[in-house]
Image 1 (cartoon, rainbow, N blue to C red):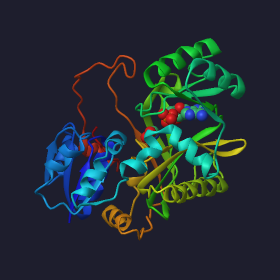
Image 2: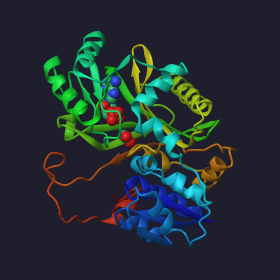
Image 3: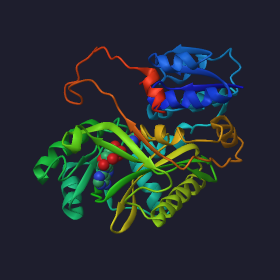
Length: 363
Ligand code: AMP
Ligand code: GLY
């Protein structure tokens, strides 16, 4: 079986390891990840956000099955291009991935189909509408509609304090996009829950908590992510009922996407907040979480290739995970995240890492 993976981060490195356990791995990357290159039968370096270019790389390889992984690659329509060239594809098509790349669409979907876990939100298309929305909602999260690499959200109390300060960001986003999403600020503990879906059913993965602040004791600024942990079927601050609630929300979302004519095949990742009023949706993503996927894929016992095939067949296989705790920790350059020193040499003792039963993933 020839399985193609698109992407080149640490998340894709663990995916490559899992694919290579059961199939021949082929990879298309935007930059060489030596970890993936070592596992691949063949790989190409190209603009992974250019669907025709990706399809052209693999044209003569008789690829059986493909999985496009990063958000921007899905938003560009790489799954569509591969499917149109006759390959089975286990990642969402562009119009299904919309649930991540268009936050206005996502909030409207939740509203129109009455999906549980919804929150207060308004779309503002000018400054007056924004001021009105902030006054009505109170404490808010300000969000651009499109993909921002995890760095686009500004939350009152965390990133700004007064309406005037918030409006500086509102103006910046309005100038660029012509609109901005203004959401009620959620308070509580955030957790990530990922599920496989064949468009109708879901097969859940264990919950994980992302860890975004730099430095020991969380004293540093927010980053794209410093690591994550999972403790099996629950997290210390969750009740089993919170997990059921999150599963229910994800199921309702998959059914709504089907009704909306955008069958969702692949991995749906819900970012949730456990609040005093129950589980609320912060975000939906149409892909594996980064780095939380590394926690759960390390525990996956079912063949990922079988799961991907069952997604394309619309006969979703149940994914089984070992019930263990995991920790992902990023090694970052000195000065990260404000002034990372580039090109520093890093020496790593791989055998010592293996002795600790840990896994070294490159990004
Ligand atoms: P996102 O880029 O949408 O994943 O959001 C990045 C981070 O912003 C999330 O992980 C949350 O910590 C925070 N955030 C997003 N939306 C809200 C909200 N409505 N209330 C509070 N925090 C939020
Ligand atoms: N864990 C954050 C993300 O993958 O967007």
